[in-house]
Image 1 (tube, rainbow, N blue to C red):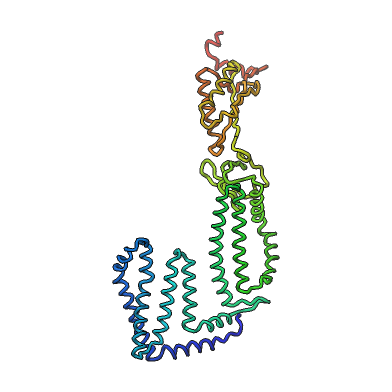
Image 2: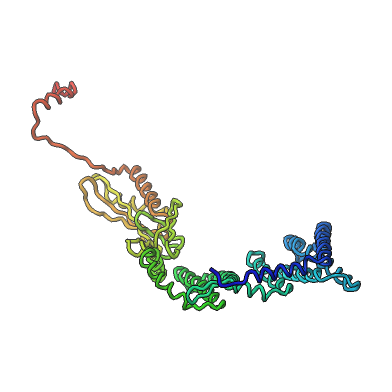
Length: 442
């Protein structure tokens, strides 16, 4: 799979280094001394923990979490470094062995410097990752095996056509992409914050700009990563055809919803906060995503409606141009009623309702004379359809019912009279049995 890599050569090199540097009496003594110093530094850091904490409490700008972080991360390597360099000075003065101790001293010093620098940055995985990478590079430099390691990782490679992929290349991609991906996230948040703060943009345009900027930033990070590691981007040209085939067959709905979402945001037909009705769903638009729109109903249910439905189906946007909505309420009264009084009572039913607007003024219209009733229709306006339409209509109808009851106005119901032209003798005899006695005497 990999190219011809001389594993035995690298293995022999490692074994030789171990034999020459580890399995030597003087070096073994240094390793024992280093182990003793490490244990001593650890126990001493435990003993000095509270005293150092009290000393740092005098520095008012340091919060408790920062003090704990300094003690836990820096005290042990700091004490170990003091022990190592103290021994190194003594060893130099008395010609004692100090080769291994010198190497460990450089490693611990590099570790302490990296830890000290990261103290000034937020605690997150990215800074931990960067500190580890920096220390590994420093350790390889100190051990004088940096170039050998680079050559070894570059030798672990395989070739596919014109594309050569090595472990070194993959490592570089992971490191650079992790850093750029993290920076892209930060830049995306800053860009999104500035777009949202702009008062000149509508909500739909803000959503559109946020999504486009986020996509462009992350795509740029990926392309810059590949370019930084020396990958010829033309080698990935074949992916264009594969992506096109995938879009044509398996991703039709996804692409359709994505394009529909862009159209919705561009033409501003649906915006976050709009009151919409699509099919049996009535609610306010909470969020517009690349694939769907989130609609929250009055009952608290959140429907995820595909963007394509807003393009292909009939949608009622109650707040498209403004928030004014006219609500209709139909009422029927009997023919014995005073129609002028009925009109007055219907209009009075909306006077004490806070949600109903005074302008445009409510109107009561006589629709016509029906089979069983005289039909009226009340028109009134509200400016908060998000708070519901059926509930305010119900409130008005209850007020109309109470007013009609006070003034003895009847709301009729359908009645039918049946006239029988002929009836058989058997049916007549049966009816006679059920007649009341006084009716039979008559």
